[in-house]
Length: 319
Image 1 (cartoon, rainbow, N blue to C red):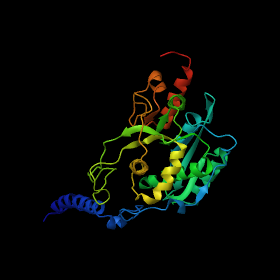
Image 2: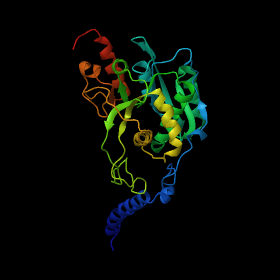
Image 3: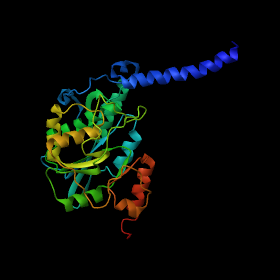
């Protein structure tokens, strides 16, 4: 066999072997040792969320000065630019129609980091006093743990708040419109809203980011849930979800998992407005459009600042 043929065959065979190995790994969780950073967990087990100690806790005074709305933003160490953009714009502490709105960022432990990464985060926490961190590996499939950490925090340290929102650091949030809608809704217990997904089911395509095997979830349809890009709930619901989570088997898709908890609790999802206000996609920007939405997804930090400044400049203009 000529040298060229050997090279050609090698180029064909190596990708096939790689894809076959990936297929086997995804199909069989027992072989996830092949995936650095992946966490091997049995299927259908319950997770003890209370076992994770808090590493960083902001000093809050919720009893003396209770916020109306707490924004909980999932984040990672390397997204500091996004945090700074949010602090300058929609996440800045403010009073809206006489109601206080505050923001906190949620963290685990950086899996490939070192002591300097954690020291930098501590310094950032000392400066801004808006970081919450627990001792768990900060990976995509641990978003469920990170979200439950946020619910645990608000249950234990800020139960006097009226509402909370879980969202992500690549989001544009309009807190002015959100507060306006919540005041109109005026439901302060058993309330949960966002972009409703009442008929979604598991994705069986193995190369999808959201792939779920039949071992993990054999049913064809999930309980109703809200997109994890942004959902809002009365603070009593945070405690109820956190308490029941010890009996609900762990599921790596956090928005679906929260829906499973709500299903157990018999708390229905509700629309906040007759029109779509929570957008899991990216509506084209215009001042008038963004005045009348709560969330927009996949917005880079620079655009968050640009959009916010544009809305501030035209605050007194009519649409």
